[in-house]
Image (cartoon, rainbow, N blue to C red; front, side, top):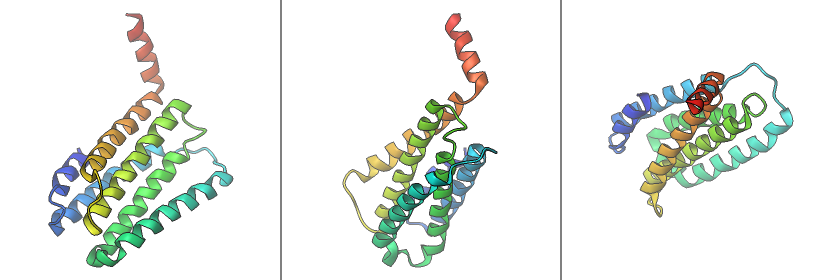
Length: 168
């Protein structure tokens, strides 16, 4: 519901108040995902370095494009991307905790979601790109679908219920 309200508000992304409120709603939704992705297992520090390098290069590329046009949006957009990267990190760190199917489904959804957001940011603060509206909507919608599906796959009750349903 939080993402849905944010979606409605972001339609008018040129309105500063609606844009900021939608960012806040998306951050709250992402924080909920982050809490859902957390676990108490240790993770490999060796896996973090390549991930952080890729994230740094991705954000550096984006900021190279949009920095000049951010102006008063610098802090909200930076905080928003920080939360997006934390969400991506927590999804990435589920590797040995979740089943492979759940892990790759959620991670694929998060990556699509982040690319959708990056496209929206480029569209808003840099300029138009080819198939931008399709990329934003497909990446966002299919990304959300994959995240939820991956979380459902990871639930033991879901597996038991699906086996029960297949027997009927």
